[in-house]
Length: 403
Ligand code: PLP
Image (tube, rainbow, N blue to C red; front, side, top):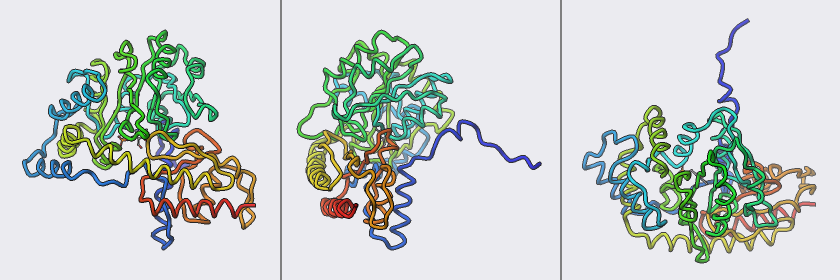
């Protein structure tokens, strides 16, 4: 018998990011000449601000092209500390900050540094699709807490209380929330803190990546700000990807207790080392530079949100609320389940619905199942209004054609 080279159980237990698979399928259809509107992506359509690009150029010309410290340049760590102080009212020392290749790496480092096999990580659903796989890669056990649709997908302290136990090591709290757009109030964050305070072995991972993408004047509060007594147990994760439209620059960061940050730096030193020197210089310009464009961009997004929400609400069988932040709309397709397509296929799930939309009307959306919530779907409104209007028209047509 021929022995096959084997793959680890770790590799086999995770799946490739469904978002990238879907986007690839949509790109293939496009390449084949189909007029596909892709609403699956986590990319913003805004350009990186010119002063940020200029700073990267300057850094390259200046010769900032060497390896940096694993945990980030002094300039960037100072800019991050300043950001936390001014925007969030939370102070960190340099030893409490790490710069990573995207916030995803910060989370990965933290989970690898802390989880033993079977340790539990509490993840409210609907969730960002990668949390579950990040936990599995680090040998942890995801514990999913479903946030009730009739509570606007807001996590209730009582739901959290049912999930917390002696094996809980992390509670991942993402807001503004991908995919539902929920933005928690300070009082809600305090109520979560009350639930977890009695479990000293439990840390909080506050994923604030969409902090700047909020609508209707809704304020933002980060967990360590709402519950300062929990600061030492909180890892605050953030980055420049979404706020500054710098997805491809791959700069994220985390702030937490120096012992945890130290372990994360050690792990990063043996995997990717420091982040790109050029992208770090660009991120200094982003964090220290003007911020009026952030509000202007959030207003543009709010306007698009209003448009796509009203269109999706007109589609027979679909329903949704207006998201409070992010650039995603999370809509129910419950009223579609059981209906027949014009070529007599029965739609039994949100995945079927997403396939139908793509095949029948060339609109790519993200099935809710991949975010731990069915029958829902997520669509991104990070695209021009004209395209969004066309997408909405196609979605209405596709739903109207169902029997
Ligand atoms: N957290 C959330 C909620 C996200 O949606 C994403 C990306 O889409 C990330 C983290 C990771 O972003 P990055 O690695 O670009 O910082």
